[in-house]
Image 1: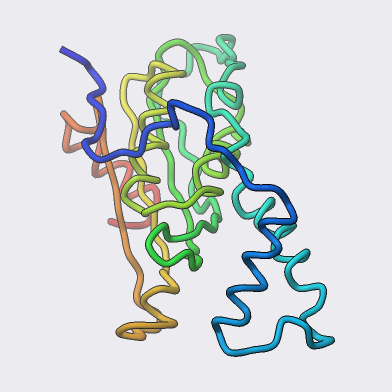
Image 2: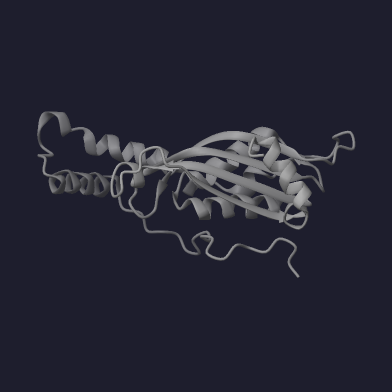
Length: 207
């Protein structure tokens, strides 16, 4: 039996490369959206907007060009026999909802119990960026972070919690300003031992 089962519904990496449009085509699409919104894409204040939006999208969705395995490829085994929880909390992130393409912003708390060594602490923040800078749901983002750590670090357990505010709820629809969404997933020892779950929750201030 797989010690770290994949979460159903997690978005897999594309199996074939996506045929990306040209920069000119992307900018033309932005001009179309400006016109659809009811404004004139040829007015002075909007003339450079398509180019700016295309450049910004390159930053917002840079995760498609990044690989989790590369980020987690270097581990350290000489850690003085340390085998307790490694936790990085309050990792800020921003992503874009795949349903409305508007931002959701929050923080991630990531913990694991080492088995074959530890990874540099900054790598956990970079791992969040790899998956956050894609079109996402918070549920899939949580699962992808956990699955990547399990696959590349082979820990005894992983605990991840994400807290975020979704602009698709606060800016449109119900306009629930300030509402936050919390998702979490435990695997290995964290899934099997409630004491370890409680330790994690206490360490991030949830107990």
